[in-house]
Image (tube, rainbow, N blue to C red; front, side):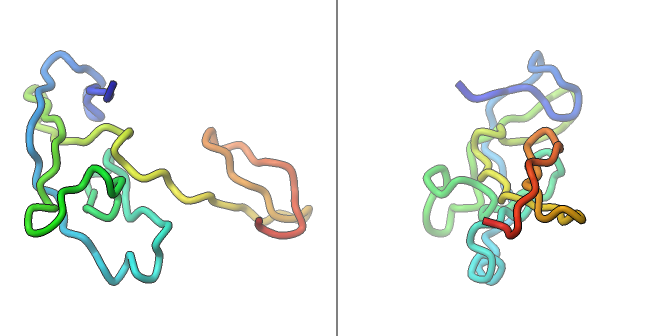
Length: 114
């Protein structure tokens, strides 16, 4: 089930389904960074290349996606389940490279990024 909680007010009380118009595919960015999502749905800069490909309509209508709209806040959004996962990030320390976990904590040091 898709989450319908508004990213602005945190409630799903005034949320309804709505077709949203989002930024078009940035083919140049996608060509050079195929595994990187360009932005997060909660930040308001979502584009087609930031969504899972199986959820995007092909052709001239690809900018229209099934999403949600909060009538209380005036916020249109797609649930996190539709967004491509963020690429793995790393942080370098004196001990080596550390994976950055989803909660922001660091994994054990490694000699190189794998």
